[in-house]
Amino acid sequence: MPKAATSIKPTDRAKVLTANRQAKMAQSAHAYVRGNTLHFYEWLKKHSARSIPEGPPVWICGDCHVGNIGPLADSEGHIEIQIRDLDQTVVGNPAHDLVRLALSLATAARGSDLPGVTVVKMMEQMIDGYEQALTTPKASMKANGDGLEPIQAVLRQSQRRRWHHLAEERIEDVKPVIPLGKRFWALEEKERAGINALFEEEGVVKKILEFKGRKPKTKISVVDAAYWMKGCSSLGRLRYAVLLGIGKKSERSYCLIDLKEATPAAAPQSRMKVRSNAQRVVTGACELSPNLGQRMLAVRLGGKDLVMRELMPQDLKFDLDRLTQEEAVAAARYLAGVVGKAHGRQMDVKVRSSWLAKLRKQHSKSLDAPSWLWSSVVALIADHEVAYLEHCRLYATNH
Image (tube, rainbow, N blue to C red):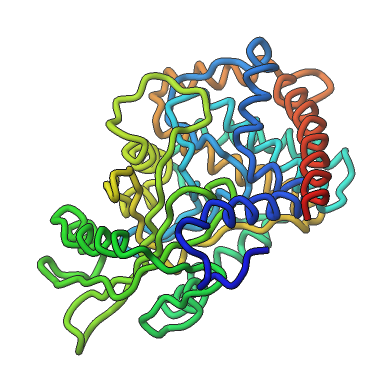
């Protein structure tokens, strides 16, 4: 593990970030799956060309796993369960999102010591939930019904959360300061100057003031900023936490901004009309997760493309590593429905019908799900298990 974070110099960041990423991925097979998008697409490139069907080119998540779906608030505070992380989003094959989500669900089930029969039922319910949502992508999805208590619990928690919850969780206090320590590291002077200049740009100020209750021309100022060690697959990219003050000191409110470097996506992609990787992420977010997309902005900082996002206290992720059989099956159906809505909103009736027909055509007599989905998940579980154990061997050797 790294030394006290206050002693970490900018020149040492890469070494510490790599060590933390390796440690996180060694925690469990599911953590390895979540943290290694590149391995997934390398397997896909080698083995899936003939078996996985080509769906209509739409914006896909690109890294569609359980941890990347959860409650998200829009700029008005309205909450909906959508895709949370769009770093890997591209215009691509929607079948790739299905396979990656199925792999994540199956790995989570194995982590919960659920029998293989449950995984079969999860795949069947997952594809049914996706297909149902695809037919009515604009209909609201209620987290009701048997087995959805884990999802309902997170949704209730999201609805109760306010700014002080976010502050205590992210920066450990409601005081207007980002404490340097394990997660937050000191900035170089040029980084701090660049961040200060960024939040004076007209487009950036306008985006911040679009939120409910904020008036145009209100003064915003950078109260504090730090380098942020966060995530797993994104460790190694530039990432900053910025605490903004909004309004005069006597009546100031605060918000927390996440600035994350956007790098090329691993997912196979069709031609996209975007100027940069940051613009790709923002465009994909607007299509797939409007609640998130409307509070994101592509920016330039230090000669690199970054995505700016205001963090909301209502934003949460699901922790589904310990589920009953009933909960696992219900969660698979519901989460796939969220993805089906995100894909379906981008398709007209004719395209949706064609994609549905292609999905339903390949159901087998022994499995009420496409055979290519099941065979891909089985092969991927075996492949990732070998890779995970090898990762653990190397990690143990070096530590």
